[in-house]
Length: 409
Image (tube, rainbow, N blue to C red):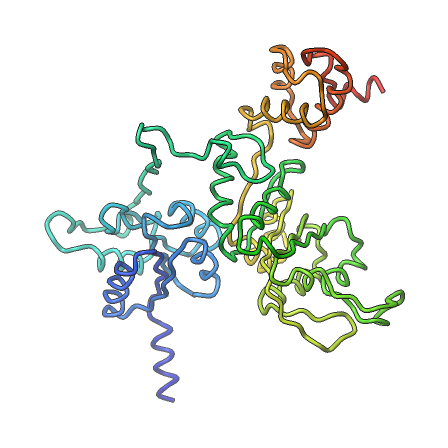
């Protein structure tokens, strides 16, 4: 009875998730909060923090201003979006003192700020319950010459990727950060933006590069066959099962499983996939045997999974498991700086005599909305390579867009 009362007392204490790569800082904060009867959980990266929040039961997220993998403000924004009742406290990157909390913070967050703020004349500032505090402005990383240090050179491009616009430089940066880690990744973006290329880059840049990368398109396989494709089956498990087979998950052991168009997976299969993600075990249809597998999971979708989860059309718990580290790919019409280099790359790929684009041609390309994104541009350039024949320059008449093609076909 006494132990139950003690447990109840412990559970009632405020809890904080502390996120910092600085061991000394973590230790100092844990000591301070433990002395003040707080429960603490410690992680050293933003991705791990997002993964642990779901099960931690913490009311306050305490973020170091400098994290090894993600921007602190990005982690804060993702955490607020997923857990509306969570209070977020940021530490100043310069001196590691509390510098900001979200608006309308609860009493627990205000008490944490008070505990961690030194009681000297410079920093002893009282925080009122209704005070609205804002996040500090982002401080961009710069090179020695003062320019923004974004990946832009060809050496920093990902395998198979073309273009170094600021939008894609950010995608490359995020991809390189997460690739060495086992963290689940959710790649989002419209059809034709290159989601599978990003997934392959993550695999190739990881320690699993020498192991298999198994891809399964959840939209292309009939619902009646998808479960057997994922988990495998024993001979005789169903009509037509003339021999036993392992599933795609098992085939990806020690490697990477890429679940393309995960939003089209039926709800009943989503629960089975979630069970695998939680315990790392697969069971073939018709078999009582359970196999443990080590698989890094990357998922992709061209629809808004978060919206579908809120509408009850996709399992919310599965969404949170898959989207520990989201990467959003921009559409081509937001990558105007990459349009020319992509077009010329495709022309060379198709062996066009004319590898240059006239100014008028570039104007025509720039004014198109590109609903099919990079895939559509590739098809347009393939047509242009054929229509240009021996012309030294790709002219506007060689650029036949989808609506025009239907008109002249």
